[in-house]
Length: 421
Image 1 (cartoon, rainbow, N blue to C red):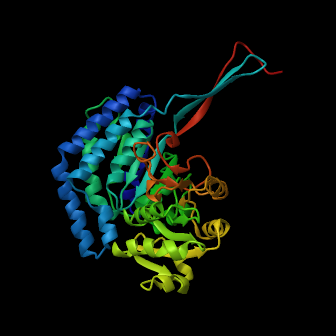
Image 2 (tube, rainbow, N blue to C red):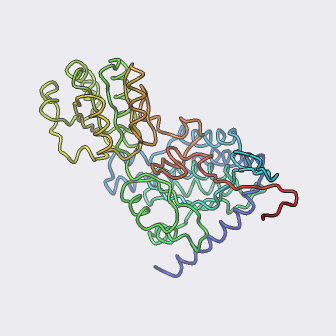
Image 3 (cartoon, helix red, strand yellow):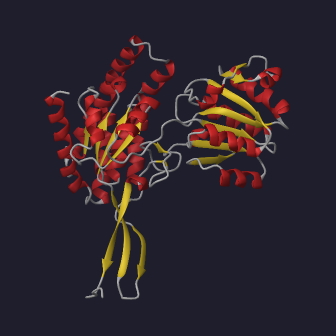
């Protein structure tokens, strides 16, 4: 590691801490104004951002990256408009800072309040999605947190172009321009320094990317982490499922976008209905280019099926591939999810309310859906405006990480001369 990289990163950390002191007390109007100004800058610089994105795409193709990875990387004019629109949507959301979460009085006359506050400085390490640059920056700013962004090398030119628009926008506001910073190097040593906390200047790390990135972050981080390792998501078609819903939800959960963490990777279906339901579900998936993997039982009713292996159940394909299993009932479906799932997102398709509640009560993933696609595992779809990522941890933030999840709290205690005996 060069002293030059260390110096750059330590300066970024110090600047973020200073910027946080200003941002943490900024009014809702100041933060919203900044988001609108930045959104305008991004739209105004659309041509430049797309030209830089094209650099990343050409490099990705020359490096033989998969189509799924290139899809994650690609931007177009609609994508730029969506980035700006998302920022404006975040500005419309209620300020998560300074809210009275609880209050109570003690017998000794003390009045106690629990009040929401920003976390501090948040480090976000992400890979191929350049839109994360804007999403993460916007959510952190609105929640009063300074942010340090480290994009993946695959999306470096795109992310930096978006960041330049963010910086231009911040320079036109009353906020510190270092409220949002992007690490200006592809050097992997920069990630290691962030995981150490930059001399205690970073309070939390949020990884958003593939298994190798998240595994490294969770293993090496010396500060708290919000994140998930893999998104092995399941769709369980219960014996009381409506066939139309079963087809529509399963196909959307798998094929809408195969490269996102909320895409379904495994289909479970009850034994009592599989001969009737599976051919129709699998035919639709296959017609859309999805590879089906299953055992002889599945192959008997759908000959195009490829052989499934034990490792398939624990594989996040992020591609047009789905593993299929026939289960004896809801308990076997739940057991399979508990054994192979990663706590991300699961869906049950059923018209039986008791079955749905049983599934909800016995599956402990961060997001569970009834008769709806797993691809709704998204902060924007939850009404959060956007998200930094999905957390499968059980402490503090869980599920989509939006504004409220980027706050913590403090207690303010009001007395009138009380002393403790």
